[in-house]
Image 1 (cartoon, helix red, strand yellow):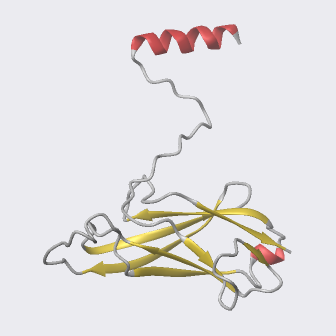
Image 2: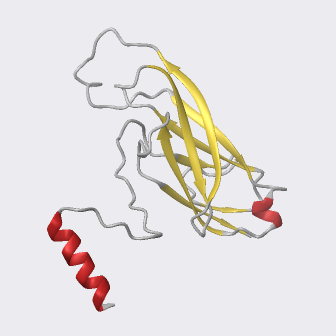
Length: 157
């Protein structure tokens, strides 16, 4: 342990990056899209806890920021309660360029919704009792950095 501390302080002073196995820093979102809204068809929109017995699927919805134009792919990366990637749902979309900006819309995200569905009933979520706190993170195109903050939601039995 003493040796590890010495090596870390030596590397910190030399300007060399220290690689720690298993550590993956979370990148700050780029704000190119809005945080994903998680809903279940037929249930209240503000609910963040869903019963695996009562819902068929979940819907994720986001929107591209007004600065995003052209053809893109939005990835909804869904992580299990244990932090494993469960599914990467890709949605292709295209945004027409705008002619000008108004003062009211200058800093606002575009409101063209981009949505995807995650089946729940009859999947490994219910069959393998993958209940708990899930996370969905939106990524734009092939970026390694999320385009918005993660959204957490719970799936219970």
